[in-house]
Length: 290
Image 1: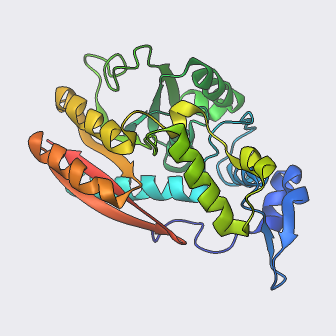
Image 2: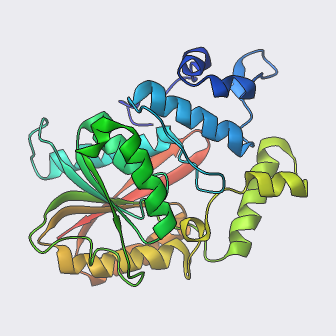
């Protein structure tokens, strides 16, 4: 994790329960007697992350309907911390500058916009092509007055575009972020979810499968998976190179890195890759600029 990430150590569940009492029913003891939650339960994970948002990010309330992708706060914050450091260093920006960021595919949780606004005091715009997700994200922004002046959620009406229709003609951003759909199909997503569940608890019961498989189709998979999605990001970013300092995206699969690098070289972009490690999960951020 990033050195400044406040979630290096175990969660203080007693403190979090005080901010969100609903979390208490999901707290259990592990074999060594330490308090934890069942991370294979989507309800428990949602309760934990909601508690973190209420306790540490000054949200008045946060509602995420069942079935939508649950954002793990520590990892999402890690991404933003790395982007901030790279951006300030690369472009020699003042440390106290209020940055403006764009999240491509903000989803119903709108998490990068919320963290950017509440933790860093940035101005954030979230772009999302799913109208229902936009409605949910906007409702969460309205619930916390402090967010209303710092976060804007926009509906991308044309799913063929990523930046177009969102970035205004005379609008400028310091950076973009993106957590692209990982999988190329529903079958691949289900298979990977079952593998994760088995690693967590050895449970492959069908009832538990559906209960823990959270996320809408557009959040989890798309034709060509994350490699093709990021290649689309790179191609379209060329049109906005004069309006965005730094483009970035998460890359979950290491096998996709060579394909992405090839596309970046074709676009004549400068780029850098930052490895990320949270527990046993390995990921990376690709950053590019013109």
